[in-house]
Structures are given as structure tokens and as C-alpha cells.
Image 1 (cartoon, rainbow, N blue to C red):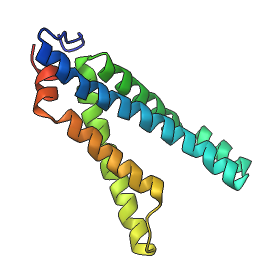
Image 2 (cartoon, one colour; image 1 turned 180 degrees about the vertical axis):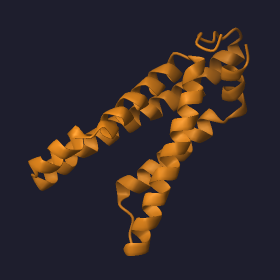
Image 3 (cartoon, rainbow, N blue to C red; image 1 turned 90 degrees about the horizontal axis):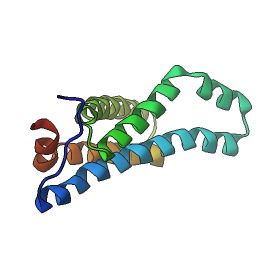
Length: 140
């Protein structure tokens, strides 16, 4: 059943679980960084309007909840979390890459946080697509 947890049976499988857990930790790290960035911007600018606006967007809360759910699902080895993480990671990587491309066409530098998120998504997707991790989540 696709919603069930996968159980490691050998020592080798237990070692491979580390990659899935690392991907889960990266998803949780993204959630913390993403949400923390909103408050960091508020502390730097002092603009309460920006804080209120950012926190009133449903997409902000959706991204936060999805990243946390994916992270905890990967750490607990739920099969659905692999698929959800793959789709969400590709979607976010494409979105942030398009935004970075538009930004680079109008100015010469890329914000550090945006570059960090691109690297984070590439690392996350690389971990998910490792053959051992794929096999762990896609086999019965």
C-alpha cells in the first residue's frame, strides 16, 4: 500500500535510510529558512506592512506546511512523501530558477538566499533520486 511505512530489513538498507532522512532534514531546513526569511526581512526593514502581507498569503502557509509534511514523511519513511517531495521539489526549483533568471536579466547579482535555495533544491532532488532511495520508496 502506498501510504504505509517502509521497513529496513538489512544493515545495508538501514545505512541507505540516512539519505532519505537527510532529504527530510533538508525539507525541514527549507521550511525554517523560508519562514524565517520573512521575519528576517521584517527585522531589517522594520516594515510591518511587509510582514502582514507575507503572512496573509495562503502560498506562504502552504509552502511551510508542505515542506514540514514532506520532511517528516521522509524522515519516517512514508512512501507518499517521496512522490510529494519529488513533485514539490521540481516545482519549487523551476519557480525559483525562473525568478533568478528574471532577476539576473535586470541586475548583475543574485541574492544570496535565492542562490542558497537553488543549491538546496538541487541537493534535495539529488538525494531523492539516488537509486538506493528510489528503490527504498518505490518497492514493496
